[in-house]
Length: 298
Ligand SMILES: Nc1ncnc2c1ncn2[C@@H]1O[C@H](COP(=O)(O)OP(=O)(O)OP(=O)(O)O)[C@@H](O)[C@H]1O
Image (tube, rainbow, N blue to C red; front, side, top):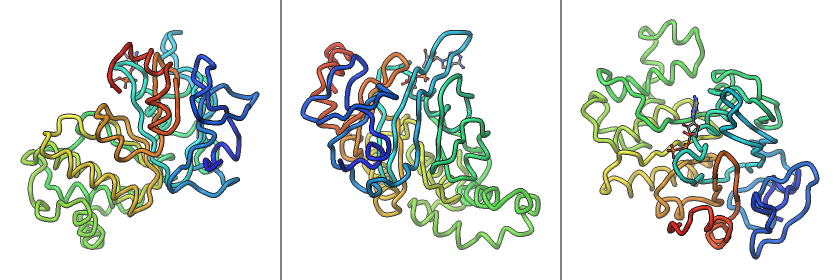
């Protein structure tokens, strides 16, 4: 079993209905019925027995008694890339909000590097190395590209650094320049965010994230609003963040062609539950997943 998460705390490779995922051997875990792959090779995964970067157990969130996310359990190995798909309203963003601490969990547990962070606020999780982007752009239109990254670097350095914000700006020059270089924005350093294309805005959001050096990155629909011409470059950048920088990535995305070139595993959300989690090939061959999409092409 190449998946370290399964090795540390095995959970069966089954769909939510209890059907086994085709062509993937399963091991039983009486503690959870949530699906994670049992036999798939996971690129960049940690050694067997290693503590997963992220571990969710029975995670749920309800609003006024209505379950939005239900009983989600899975492990994420070091260096893994998991893509989340599912129909609109399936609970993908809500799950990201639970992992990053924006929503308090109604049930279950979130562990980061073996530490229980279920009750920790967003900023505490960020300090532990959990970073995320949002479905809608979160930039200041009147600030330049470089100032966005500089401010993020200062914020990551702690409250006192932020207090001395402009006086010490020069200290971050190298860090800012490196990050802008990596995200292909060096030539736009002095451009206002409002003048960027959608693809460049997404790159800047990544730059703001990367400058704080997160180990686990959650990307919520990074291709949203991006023109078809800009998708390949943004995809390549995300691939490089994963492969070259070795970051662990979870990504919600509707573009299957983008996901298939990036993801080690595909997670399918449906009605707030995790319907399947396995290699892209196994998920796409899963009849339960196909039925959930009612014939929609995966
Ligand atoms: N704060 C909230 N209060 C009440 N209901 C909410 C709240 N946030 C989300 N929901 C509901 O939870 C469900 C899941 O929403 P969520 O945004 O997580 O889905 P999603 O899979 O990310 O969808 P999309 O692909 O359209 O972004 C939806 O029915 C949504 O209306």
